[in-house]
Image 1 (cartoon, rainbow, N blue to C red):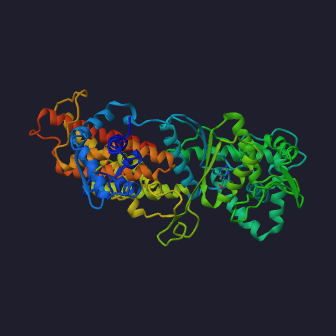
Image 2 (spheres, rainbow, N blue to C red; image 1 turned 30 degrees about the vertical axis):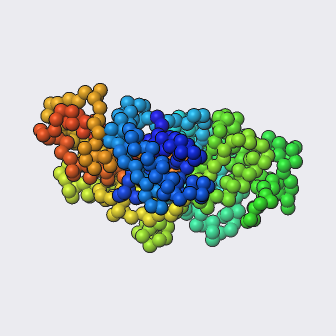
Length: 590
Ligand code: ARG
């Protein structure tokens, strides 16, 4: 379906042409003074310059042509040359009814669907997840859903970190704690045990300990690096431990992501790119893309137009070791081979921006990807505490993801129990849904690149621009629909929503009609916060409508009753679709 703003633009453009002006002046936009009108066209001002006329004269000419237009209730020329437009209620209702009858509310899909790999989550085995990983998971999951909604094939890849020095650190620490383990017996040539020599909580304790210890003991760090090197070159015992780390971590990670309502099509690991490295290095050398610099193999990626320093892309260190950049390039090779993607999106902390810029330049320059393959980095800001510093636990430690989820869920639970009577079990269940919405909405309602403040009180509030408020609106609609059902009446879905009979109805309908605009901008700008803005407005318009309008009332005629029920059902469906794009769900009650 065409967007409503485009439909009006078409008519205004036609009027400009009829009066002898270029059609480009007829572009209509949302009004920036919603108190005065719904839509506006500012083209007369620009046309005035081109045609050397007074803007108001042009505006009046256009307006005079559109007085009888059936889409328009009111169109006026305002000094110095604005054209203010209000739509007719019949047109508005017709549009809303078309939305109801079309799939996905008439939202047009991508005309050339793409295969898109979204690299998000990015946890590291053996290391606890932190808030940055949570942001990546939340933003990535939402973008994946938006891309799929628009008709693309989006493939989420968790891209597990499993290959760097942290592995060596964990193994070295394990050796320090339990030197008697069979894995450290160099003469052992039998089968290693199936069972891991540690649990997830031991494993999570080992890494921070090892990391801290290595800072004070250079010898230990050296040993860890040596172990990493041996592991990467196939040391049997270390590889066996590494596999145990993977199993234990992945089981735990799947549980955590499940709780976050995040899922991945691919559970690929950094190490999966290893088999591609040798050939890739050969290729880069053979085609003279790479050169030796201080013993290291590098590819220059500087461009003439650069205003800042661009270091070369490191392919191999002077000792032949591979780096984060090597793995990321080889992963691109692997992805091209397995999926031939049109677009790859990486979602991490903003601080990795330079790394990815270098990787992208290198991949393009060396033709590891086709010229038109889109490589995109989406960097997000930090989640801060109220003091403006990165959020920490009360004792100052790094914040673990489970802890954060629990914090939010407990607060929501407290609120539910404070206000209402609900069975403990149900309240727990509802709190986990609402808590997740609070957390995700709190994150996604900000532009991803910005830092934001984690404010437990505000995020979990049932009022204002919050996840719980959106869910509360949905639950409220559900309960009206429930009440309606209890009256024993049914609605014929073939009926239509009637033209608005009050300002609050009109406002609600207008907001409904903007759904596909919103999805398109969320998609084009890769910006879930657009969805949040839209549903917050929609929930707000619904709330005004609800306070003003008796939906369940004997006074309503049958048609009016049906119209109101159909309208709030539509609002519910839109809200449910939108929160699904954000990655959370609504409870039945709250
Ligand atoms: N594991 C990395 C980290 O914790 C993020 C990985 C992002 N993806 C990638 N292809 N480099 O920072």
